[in-house]
Image (tube, rainbow, N blue to C red; front, side, top):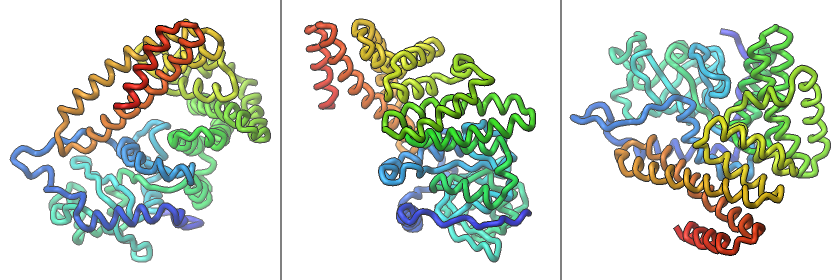
Length: 419
């Protein structure tokens, strides 16, 4: 195992109390019901991978991002598992030991059983780790419970066993964690794939003000991939750079941060020496296109917002966000009648989606916390977006001098606000 040049830095002190509280609740057994697999009719659990699990738990982090914009729960995968570039950072199996900290969610597997648990006491000098597992007597890394031949003492295992069984971890930290990791393992800093994955990890946080930070990672990935003639990775990095730098330029320009905006413009100029904006945009997914549309609206690029959202709609005619963003762009372009047509399309799709989600929610098993969290979040997002679109509809109808429509949408908005 390669010794790191630096150790993992301590978490931001503003994060640690949240970790401590969750560990206290876990130790009190507040999260533990009976073991799911031992009942006569074992309760169902919606399948979820490490990235999905991190995303579910990351929702609790959102309030802290008001003061720490770059904090998130990051999925860190073992490179033994093939994962898409935008699904998390992937590191050599032994590097997971550098990342793991008490309170992290850990996904363990013996290739037959897959088990989420929580990292407890970590003894780096003694090279052992214990897990704060809700069911310690049934912990599957105990002798006879797993196919790897691991014999945990209670829930404590040695580092070598952790490296063998750990699929990955979900750790709550800041983006600076990756700077420390690259300093600890310099060879990783020269990896185009690693830089590209970090870029995607920053994008996944969701804050538009972080776009320049992601753009710098994608730029490094693009240059590194070019040096190694990895055409696929170079193209993936170029697409990420186009998205993040275009969004970064728009957001920074609107905020009056001209120096940062100029840096983003410079990255795009270099990118356009080899690629056209159209070719890069054509490789974006619908959700990425609408993110682009949302950001460029900040600095008045209504034309680009309209074309990007139109492309998203062409790719997925049932993608609601495409319609509300195109409606926004068209309203700003002085095309209120067309904006209202998009509003009507959005509301029809939103009605269908909300009804389906409510039906799904009613059918979820009370103990299926994963499905409950996923459906609840999707429902809340759609209901909140509906209010935004209804506000837009009132404005568009007013500009179109359609008093009847404006009043109808105003009534719908009042109903939505009261729900």
